[in-house]
Image (cartoon, rainbow, N blue to C red):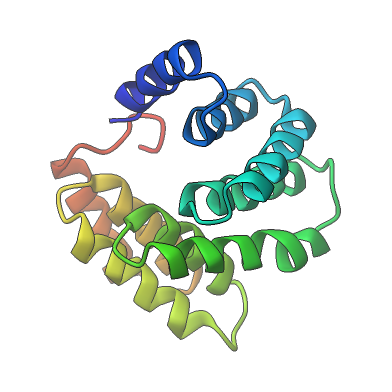
Length: 168
């Protein structure tokens, strides 16, 4: 699944280099190469050009989260940049599992929004029941909350399905 996405991003960059979705793909490729400042700058440019695309908002949230996770930017940016970007991506595409998962990862960290985050993990699984990565992400966060039995069930489901080897 992710290798196919990488191929699609590479082809889109080659054949439609200025298309906003091709540029979103470039954001993810830059982030994968850990060129995070460049990725975030490009994501902001794409969002300004194509605010109607959920992928543009998602790319901003993702790039900013990676900047924080790598210790390059301040943790406060998760609340001020990533969270609103993931919310907007989810608002624009409520039937897409990816924004559900990334918004959920933000929301479960706060006790006031934890239930909403858990519901979004559940929604992502309902949208893509055959994607083991969805179960695995819910397992990680469930385990952090002390739901060992639920996490074990989700890991078992993830192993049965097409979970990315990088996660397992």
